[in-house]
Length: 534
Image 1 (cartoon, rainbow, N blue to C red):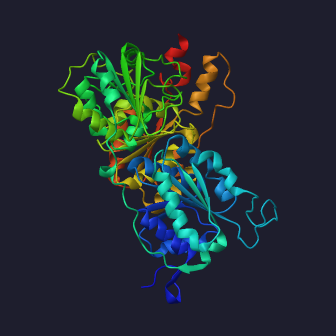
Image 2: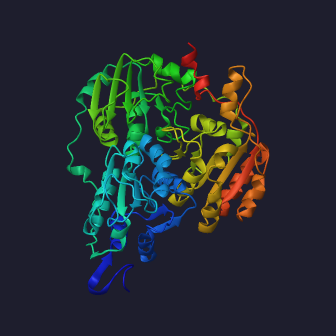
Image 3: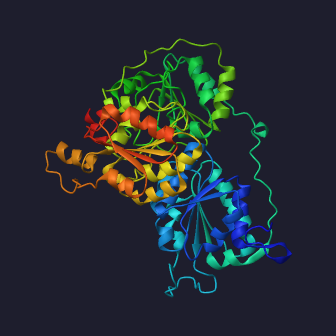
């Protein structure tokens, strides 16, 4: 059988060359929206092993690809058309950039035959410099000018997105190159990095500092998660008797019941006290950003050590080992002797939160929770029990409201049970993609907490003793809305949440669970940061 786009003599279309490059990158799912400029690429997906999920908005394509990459560690792919289609994916690309997601955004441009640099001619979807939209939110921009270069350009861009520091890469393809004929690319899969060939990291300075530590502490983040360092984090922590604080990106690296895991975010005073008491802190794969350090108010420990592939910019460590987290921790673990008793008692329980208790009772150990920027999402992001690495997807980079539901569409294709925790305001950003969930039969359970407005913004007004303005919403009947898309939905009280979520996950189909409730924002939200009050 001829491949999609194949012509006589074994020549193929540029669109087929593009898809061949994705196959070589081991991409098995991509998200996008068709347009008149990218149809030649869509045709080429017809006979491909890559599943192309058609969404209802380009922003959803970006968020879904981001969610898929966060849950799997693989390359996320979003495909859009020219002009407004490309512009619509910018917010999602910015979120992926801020959270170090390996995302490949592929967009078309107007044909090379009509493009005149620096001039606007009024061609459909034309901009004078479309790539400039993406430069602030990508690590590279790749503009393809010849159809013969398309396959290699996409391969190069995908590899770059996956290389540390992982971040989005944008590829721009003039539409006429997708239908042009090129020689069929040689299908050579991208080889995995041979870690055995890399020199072992030099960890002597870390060992010297840790050998005299009386109260060592580990702070682990998304870089440790990206490197697959869960076992190594555990080994080093147990050898040192060191409590482990996790940033949002590091959640799940230790199981929730591990005695060395600090089960509270650093925004809780009991967790912060451990940081303050430590004499040596080893930071692994985290940039100690403002969101996790309460606006950089966390005091510097007497000795600060760091393992990361990129230098820390928010603080200068005493020792920085620039290496893959898993490799460096493995080198440490082999040279640390025995197992030390913990120097601190595990902090107490989180604040009482029946919503979290009910939700967690329904979650399998390998579940992924995608939390939006809403009060319920803040609670799970900071205090929810995360059972495994990559078990929390949370938009703490840009803080993009509306991330939760569309990102969960991608996460649901990771093979792991997926639950999205969203608010009534943020869900409406992308509710049209209930159609995508229904058509593609995506196994996602959406828990929507309806508090009748933008609850966090309402709280900001109330904290300042002011009347809320612009925060109150008149929500639709969410159950009826889901039913219109033929998505199963029900409204429950918190007491019925566990059963509803269990049934939703077991159904293997998209479903919506609505809870009408108003919650007080947790300590990990900026108005409640305890260090800011000191």
